[in-house]
Image (cartoon, rainbow, N blue to C red; front, side, top):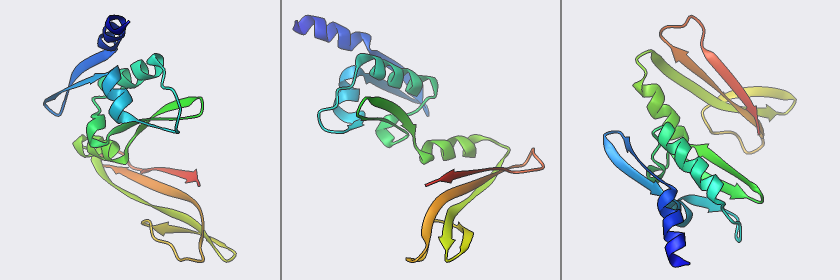
Length: 146
């Protein structure tokens, strides 16, 4: 039985390069160190294969917080960190910055605030971000609900 498990663990693995460094992921490493889940949640081999494949394809290093495998209940998801997105943006020669902030309700008004600080009495409604590129006349913006 132990030999079969070792064989399975060996099959679920990938070695790839991230920022000039070789990175190795396998099912055992993912299960022990990289899964964020509720107690008693079982991570399937398929979910691990998907996570490893997405990390390899996107050249993400989960050991430095660029990607996470998160599972609560029956749903497993890969979460890519803000750090990974910002590193990619910085590597693009046409990237020209980002502004972001909160959407709050202050009394009867809905206000877009820059940054991440709000007054205690503000009700958080969501967030926004605007990305600027040198090769485009108009920035790209997105808003999300809290």
